[in-house]
Image (tube, rainbow, N blue to C red; front, side, top):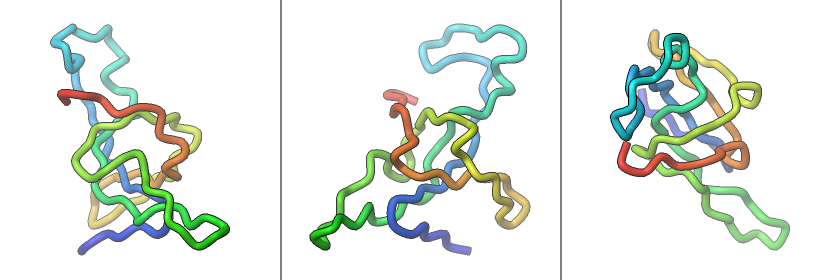
Length: 96
């Protein structure tokens, strides 16, 4: 199944790791948090009032940070993904 989010939406696969990208061991419990993940698919962008498309901040393959309260959990072919408005993406994790 191919996912194609509409407008300014992104599908994010949660990432669970016991070490940070810099190799620092994370305290017990932190690795279970699902407030960062890999962008699986991204929409074309937000349509502005003048008809132009404003590009998104997160692209497929990037690891992003997001607040869980703005993520909608969806199951796609047995896999947990989050559907998030791109404006709620907080950061892109470099080197992840």
